[in-house]
Amino acid sequence: MSEAMHGVTTGAVARRLGVSPTTVRSWEQRYGIGPAVRAQGRHRRWMPRDIAMLEEMCRLTATGIPPGEAARVVLGQSDAPREETSVPVAEGALAPVPSGAEDAPGAEGHEPGSGNGLPLGDVRQECRGLARAAVRLDSPAMEALLEQVISDYGLVAAWEEVMVPTLHAVGRKWESSDDRYVEVEHLLSWQVSTALRRAAVSTPSTAKAPPVLLACVPAESHTLPLEALAAGLAERRLPTRMFGGAVPAEALDAAVRRSGPAVVVLWSQARSTASHALARHVAGTSFGLRGARTTPLVLLAGPGWAGPAPAGGLLRPGGLREALDLISSVYGEPVASPGA
Image 1 (cartoon, rainbow, N blue to C red):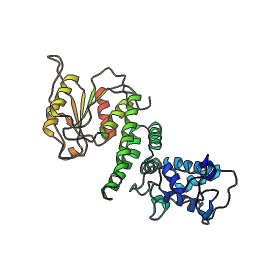
Image 2 (image 1 turned 90 degrees about the vertical axis):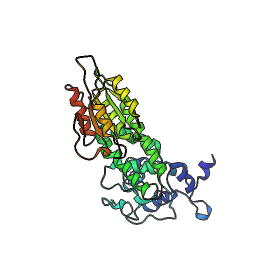
Image 3 (image 1 turned 45 degrees about the vertical axis):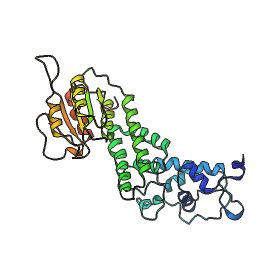
Image 4 (image 1 turned 135 degrees about the horizontal axis):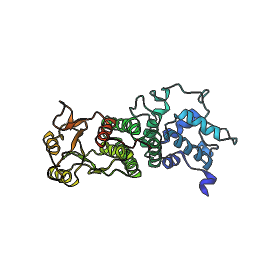
């Protein structure tokens, strides 16, 4: 009741929304998204209706809509008269924003919490939205956006054009800012992993065939690319066995012999973890009935395998789409296409 009658401060509403007070003030100064009334002493007091407008700004910018365009939508939805605030809106503040202007130094897009302070470059609108939500630590917004881009564009495009650029931007920001943004990277990685696993379980395999075995080499713990591959294989209705990060050599050998996979994918993020001897061993592992024994196709995935072209039953795909196509070809036709 007190909040409805007296409103809340800018700091309190910023904490509630997961943005910085600077971003809230910037939205008011640039776009007129401000409190309808002021308390004595000219301090801002945000009423429920004002907060609802800020919530809508957060929702729209989390989808990748630039703040200026989001503000026009929010103000257009607010048809009730508002009292004059003591902070005037600059003339032309709601004019169309030139492409790239909000990424310029000093623009609102670089305010803390906007997400555009990350080194994104020329990316999809949804990528910017995911970055904004990540910097705000807005898990619900990230979850909704990731689910939407996978549904709209398919797993490969969602991974290559939205997830990976945002993950790389956060990583670069962390490396260049004295370990700041670690919490952003961790939360974003968790949300991406969650979205990929949901995509994988939402399309269970219908193929009655030997599986694809996915594993990181020993001492390698980066699993997100393998999770993306698992989701892509699920999208194509192909059977998988996901063993995750840092699989010991003995365990990998046992898994191959016990499951009899058609394909084994070994992920290595760095050259220090890549083991060509282990890859050759896996490629030479045979299983099956006497007289009809077979060996798996082994894909060397990840930058750790960079170097001369592999040989002897080893292939090195150039990316997620190429890996999916190579694996699909092993199973022959028909292979269910994405979205089928």
